[in-house]
Length: 213
Image: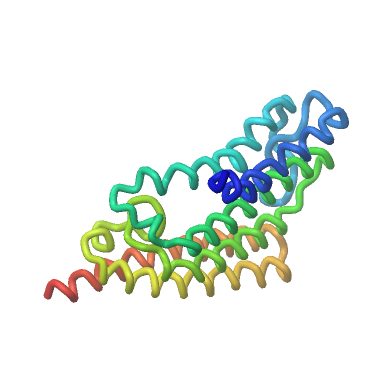
């Protein structure tokens, strides 16, 4: 009963897009938009039945992933994060369900506004960056390089550095997405994502070499 009580909020969040899809199901035509380009223009159609799989891949899979990972973590460090892991899981659950609802809504309206996705990703990066410093060494979540996994001190320094980068990068994506056109926001998203992904990897290598010198 205690486990179910703890899982209930995550289950309800994961179910939101499924409930929304079921509610509007009869309003959808048999063939619906399935993909949009960066300008929000439809470039692929498909059967509306495919929306169930899309929804599961986002909301459903996101739920089961966080349910399983702590149990198969060889070092058991994820469970040691306590409420920090729960907060991170809650934020990611909200993100995945919100994204699924947005896709379903866009399908219903036969149009998409990419700005919403860019804003959502920017907020997610900001939240992740804020939690990076609390992530314990593990094989599934965080900046996992040969050097961070080899040395706990390198892990801590890399995640402190990476957390600041992701927080600032997320804010930049969020703010610029509100004031510049969608096609430019897309390139901002890609550029920032590449930078905040690569720099921590380089940093971890340099810190590892410094400790071994």
